Every structure is written in C-alpha cells, then in structure tokens.
Length: 209
Image 1 (cartoon, rainbow, N blue to C red):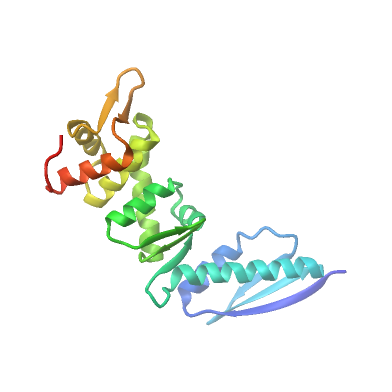
Image 2: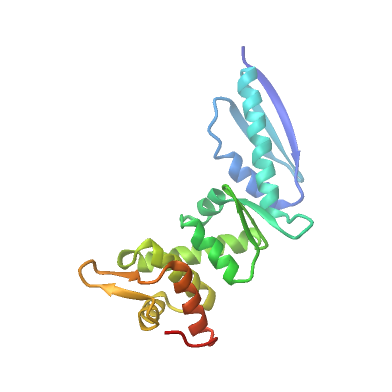
C-alpha cells in the first residue's frame, strides 16, 4: 500500500538550500521524491510504501547532515566532508594522500577518518584546491608513476610552481630519475624522503646530497 509523507527542512541561507536541493536531486530510491524550495525551507514530498518512505526519510536526513557539516564549521572551526562529495563537486578524482599532503603543506588542518575528511578549509576552497590538483595531475599523469605524482602535485600547487618544472627539479635534486625505457619519471627515494628533500631545497632550508 502506497502512502505519502511531507517533510519540511529549515535552512540557514540560500547556499544551504541550493546544496541540499542539488544533493536531493541525485537520490535514486524506490520512493518518489518531490522537492519544493521555499524562502527559508525545503518542502519534501515522499510517496511510496511505508518501508520506502522510511528509507527515503533516513537518506534525506543523512544528506542534510552532510550538507550542513561541509558548509558550517564546528566549534573548533573545522568542516567535515565526505571525500567523494568533494571529488564529485570538483569533477575530478585524486588520491587521498595527495589531497591530505597538500592541505598539510598549506598549513591547513586535515584529519582523515574513513571516507570523512575534517579540515579547516571551507567547502568552496577545498573544491577549488582539488580542481587545481586535478589539473596538475592531468598534466603529468602519462609521464609519471603514482608515487611521484603524490610528491609533485602537492609541491606544485602549494608553492605555485609549474609541475613540469617540479619534475625537472626532482631529478636535479636526486630524488627522481627519468626511465627512458618506460618514458616515465620515477622516485629513487621513498615518498617521505623525496618530499622532505624537495621542500628543503625549494624553501632554501639547506642542501642535501
């Protein structure tokens, strides 16, 4: 037997309303969901069986929590993101170590718990950061291994240096080499050592052979 349920969700501002509507439109559930935006709220009509309505209501609440967590900081000033939400909004998927290392180099808080990322960077800023990283990774993807990309991309974006130049510097600094047979740049030191040496050299913190 089909039934109907109406939920009204109050929002703080237009941005929350837009983000929430955008997320709700992506829901794929057995229940029929119709969303109507009002001034400071969203009216959500759900139609289906009792079980379908219950499932839809849980999903709506989960989405609303995710949207609020990424738009508004907690008492410590941190935002909570679902990593996949960031990648979807940015239109690109990158490795999580690349993202967290870049945040760290930028001096931003980055705490990963499963697929949840807690950061001091706001939603718009973190989406733009991932877009930049995506552009850098696209530029060097065919000529690099994943390991070296996780060093080159954070440095390129953080220090605003062309990724091709960072690759050449990595060779000059002795942390990478170009493999002629593979047509790829590869690290000759582990990722952590390579990152440390590169940063010391580039930030003028000393010379290391």
